[in-house]
Amino acid sequence: MTRVDLAVFPGSFDPLTNGHVDIIQRGLKIFDSVTIAVLSNLDKKTLFSVGEREQMIKEVFASYGNRITVKSFSGLLVDFARHENIKIIVRGLRAISDFEYETQIALMNRNLGDVETCFLVASEENSFISSSLVKQVAQLKGDISRFVPKAVEEAFERKFGFAR
Image (cartoon, rainbow, N blue to C red; front, side):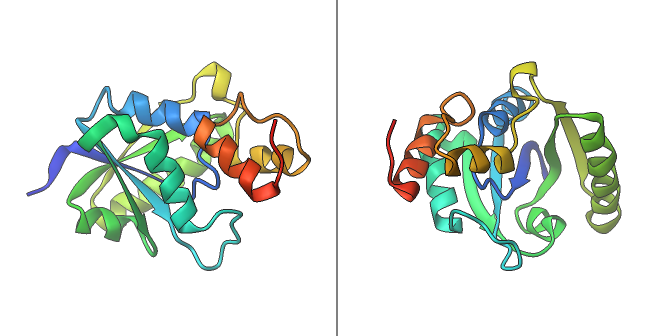
């Protein structure tokens, strides 16, 4: 049985940002539970391993109980969604350029796997945050505390060997 009270929020989450957290929390206002699907793509170079990314996300959402599930996947998202009996994909939009790109992906996903995409517009305070920018700032020892959850900030401190 396919559930519409369950949605999937996919991404590489390298790292998880406050923008991601905001979209997930707002998704939980619409859906009973959200599966956070961490992309394990061998072709994409990541700073944190899949295991590290999953652990950070689980730590951030530990208080959410069974409303949040964290799983990794590789391959097509629609195949993962089908396997998990999920029909709704949640995606965050930061800018109009995100909308154009995400619309193409949403249409492809619908054609490949009969899934719908629910777009949530980023909150103003998170609309400029991207994982790539956070990594750049952190690698240059800048303050990322306003852009990521505490567990992620601490993971960067361990990774780069510095503390604030």
